[in-house]
Structures are given as C-alpha cells and as structure tokens.
Length: 481
Ligand code: CTP
Image (cartoon, rainbow, N blue to C red; front, side, top):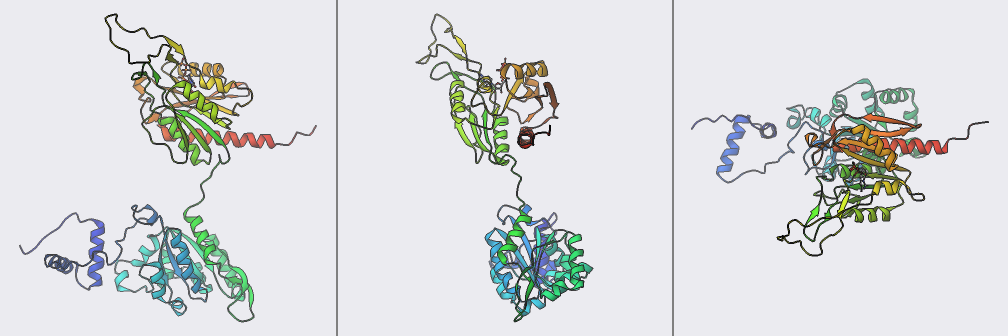
C-alpha cells in the first residue's frame, strides 16, 4: 500500500498535525509518515507539544481544564515585575493564564520566568512561524475569556486607542472580541498628559475596563503621584469579577420553607397509599430559592431525587410527619407547599401484614389527614408573611384553584392541570397559572408551558419581587397630611 487517505479527521487532530508539521518544518503528509513510522518502531513522541487549540473560550471547554482563561499582555514598564505575582494570583483563582510579552517587557521580565510561572509557553513575536502559520494572534485574542493588560503603558494604550497592530500585543488587542481589563502604569506626568487623557477616555468609550492606577511613590527617585500600577491582588480580583460576575441573590437573608413529593400513608408494615407525584417541581423550587440566596428547608415525602445542594432536607413519609417537620421549621419568611399530600390515611393501620382470608377484602377505614397548607395559613402568631399553595386539578382548573385560595387562606396558588394527558405528574414540564389577590381582586397570570426548573425560577423571581416591593412599602414614609 503506497498511499492512504483519511477522511473525517477530528478538528483537534487536524490542528495538532498542522502545528506539529510546522514545528518540524515538514509538510503535513511527511509529518503523518513520520508519526506512523515512529509508532511502528515504538518511538512515539508525546502527543501534546502544544495544547490542542479550540476556538471556544476556555470557560466553555471540557471539565479537565480550569474554569476560566486569561490572555495576559505584559507591557514594557518597571511594574512588569508585579505581573509575575499577578500570574500566581490568577492561577490560585483557577484561572488559566497565557502570557504575551511586548519587546519592551522583555527588558524587565524574562520569558523564562513568565513561562515557569504560567506553565505555558510565552508568546512575543507577531512573525513567529511556530504560532503564526495559522494566525496564532487570532487564537490568543479569542481562546480566552478575558484579556488583561498589565502593565498597560502609555504607549500601548495609545496604540490601542488608535487601532495599531504592528506587534503581537497590539494585534491581539485589535483582533479580540473578549472583554479587556487594563492596569495602567506610568509616570504621573505621562498619566496626566493631554494625549494620555484622550486615549484613556477613548478606550473607556470603546468598552475597556480600567483598574487603577493608584497613587504613590514612583520608581523614579523623589517622584510621587497617580500612576502606580494596581497591586496584583487588586488586578486579580477585578479580573475575577469580570470573569465570574456576582450572581444576584434577591432572597439573601430570607428563610424559605418548601414541601415536596407525595406522602405515603401506611396500610400495614409493607403496604401504603401513595400518589404519582415525583417531587420534581418542589425540588426545583428549593434549588431556585437556594440559588437566589435564601436559606431553604425542604420537607419531602419519599422521592427518587437527590437532595439539592445547600438545602436542608427533612425526609418524611406520611402527612402527619410532614406537618410535624413543617411546624418545627417555623418561623419562615416564605412557605411554598408543593407536596401532593394524601388527603386520607388508613385509620385501622395493621400492626402486622394483613393476610388474605376467606372473609374477603379487609375493610380499610380512611380518615382525613391534617391539611398542612390550611393549618399554616391560618396560624395567628407564626404565619409566614407569604404562603403559597399549589392546586393540582383535573377539571375546572381556575375555578377550583380560586376556591382553594379562599378555603385554605393562603396568599397565592399555583394551579396546574394534572390530568394524565398533560404528563405533569412525574413529567418534566408544567403549565401553571399563578393566582393571587391584589386589592381585593383575584388575579390570574397564565404562564406558557415550561420545564419544572423554569417554572421554579419564574416563581422564585415573583417571590423575590413581592418581597422587595413589600420591604420598600414597609419603609415608605407616611404621606404628608
Ligand atoms: N395540601 C396540604 N395538606 C393536605 C392536602 C393538601 O398541605 N393534606 C396542600 C398541597 O401541598 C397544595 C394544596 O394544599 O399546596 C392543594 O393541594 P391539592 O391536592 O391540589 O388539593 P386538596 O387540598 O388535596 O383538595 P382536593 O384533593 O379536593 O383537590
């Protein structure tokens, strides 16, 4: 066999072959020949001379990689030494750092030191045949989640403000579509110079984010003022804030009590009455409330779901145990009753397993279970300020839900059609209607079909808005008489 054609090569393999052949100054075909020869002779080279590139930001790549990636451009200034500490500070925050050194930066820090700290090769030359044969500056500009320029010198900022691209650093900055964080460092007179002021204003208009400069002593003896580069820890914190913006936590400081799942009502030690509830909706609400910053207590009947992280879960079997745990969890700011509680339990529960006898079926006497939602809604001292019930209906959905709202004394009802045709019981989607009282009127807000997670997020958003509105109203000043 003299020739071999391989189709459908993986993109990563293709890139690896292109990089490796460029490095060894061979054609791709020659390189494949060498690899196969080495394999057969058992002299296989390690397969990763470079990281296999991908066009996706680092944060979106597979789990083995760190969560986020930064391209750090080190400009030529005395503050460049602080960038060595910055690499360390970023890496301790699980941020991968790939460094680019300008020509001037190499007068202050060596590529060897930078590469030893970043554990990556260092890039400095726009015309480097190893990385530029496939436009390496484009990869450096886009295969990251953020570009940090530290120190951002007056010269580098002037180039950026005017769109120059005559070296690797400026070409990356012109080619990027990622956020850019600049940590300026220069003499106070340079910082205050009208040209620098213009350039800084332009860069801010272009969407660049600046950290510093701080004020303090300069490297130049006897000079002080604004121009010192921010400390590495300040730059790393600013970078992390851009990479992982703080998630809003509208329910921080609130305690939310949730019931979920079915209840099992024993007939005897081995049999019970149950229903088809999976608990998915209640668990999704618990997870959404926890993500919104609330302290969440979830009282759950028997379900086949894992406990949501960060949520206190009390596992129960019967309606009476559920009521007990709910009462023990009070006080709460918000209570959401999503459980499908069995309405009845067996009064004459068998102590031993009921046996078949010639007398026929054992007579099961049913008694009504306590209504947990109604009990909590009607409390006088420990009633949570917002009590939400669910209405699982198979007919006359809105009318039945409205009368449940009145009968149970809760503030809102989430009504859903649980007829078998809807697949809601045990399924992943839900179509709900939020029924609430507003100024003595009953409002019905119908939501489109959504996943149970989306319903949960939407419900928690409504709760958060109502809690915020309420605290605003509570703080509102008395109208002037
Ligand atoms: N609920 C409760 N305790 C019960 C029964 C129901 O806390 N013993 C709560 C449910 O968690 C839900 C609401 O009451 O929030 C309505 O439940 P649903 O099963 O729809 O109604 P029921 O009250 O059981 O009335 P019906 O079966 O007649 O529709």
